[in-house]
Image 1 (tube, one colour):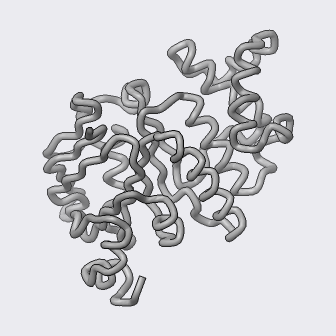
Image 2: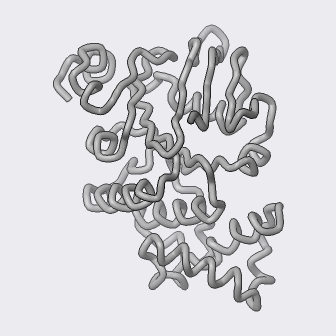
Amino acid sequence: MSVLEISGVNKTFGGLKALDDVNLQIEEKTVHAVIGPNGAGKSTLLNAVIGKLIPDTGTIMFMNQNMIGLKPHQINQLGISRVFQTPEIFADLSLMENMMIPLLAHRDGEFKLAAWKRSDMDSEIQDKAAHFLEDVNMLEKAGLHAGSMSRGDKRRLELAMCLSQDPKLLLLDEPTAGMARADTNNTIDLLLKIKSRGMTKVIIEHDMHVVFSLADKVSVMAQGHVIVEGSPDEIKGDPRVREAYLGGAEV
């Protein structure tokens, strides 16, 4: 069953066609990677999915509901969470406090940055926050300031914050960008752990090791449109991919 269906989506900025008749189907409980060179339209496509921009034409259906025109917070409430290229966390708060904010927002139906200050006696929220930190192997760091963490730890915290929203679809934009290899491998292990639970994910990533470690299906974009789709093995051997994305080199 398709969780997300993108049909005939176009977006033009001035004279630049950023998205050109994009069609994608994301199947339930799969990891679908979207790859391509810089400027291919990958992040623009994700921004259209989460409501940060409105396509000129086309439809984006999530669980049979057209999302065109919905605001980002409305799309999030439908069950879509996004992990951004640069981790979006509250650097001046502790890891535990970072976790409380989305948990309270999910429970109360609204986002309030200062809500965690009133949660000292809320054992249910604290227990849930501890559970999600433990799930990403960060419970022992719960009292530390998030801004002091490594990029890999910040990514793990952001993932935990997204998972606390119980999303039906998780969007990951360059989840290993700027990481050392050890942090990249730890992130792969964490995403494989999440994958084993059957959560549907779309991942944009330049690191082919990450893509081929995680993806069930790969779509390759170039110049705003999808040029080929297939399994990781099919993508590895496709000459169009080597030409458009890898300059003709072997994957």
